[in-house]
Image (cartoon, rainbow, N blue to C red; front, side, top):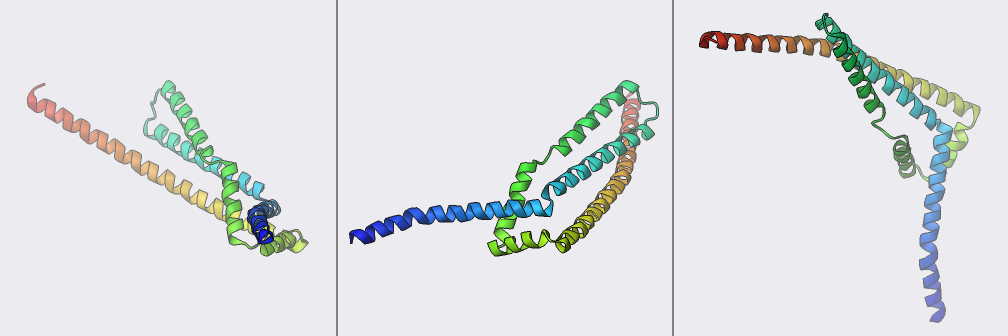
Length: 186
């Protein structure tokens, strides 16, 4: 009986340790797979695309403001440029690389059994696997570029329309206010 109790106690102690070791092993495999897949390059490409998109949006907004207000004061434009830079900084810093890595790693761990992770690592280290990764990466970059360009183009058009509507609203309100003043004799 004492041997059974000792055996049960050992199993209870060792089982969680081995599952933690398996989890650590799968975590290390996920990190290795991320490395083979070029995860850091993916993050950097995403960050660069974010910078490009944020700067493009702000340049578009500033351009629209200049077009709709050609006599805008230089000091005001200086302040608008500073605000645009702050906007861009906030967008660029809106996500954390470490958090993104944790999310990506967790998805790999959850979605792939250990043997599949090992097979993927092995495959993507081969010349054929490297070629596949080049094609996949280029395809993803092309898609991201398309999306960014479309967002930029639509942002430009939407901002132009918005500013036109904003001027129209301001003009109507100004006319309404002037009409009210003239009818009351002010």
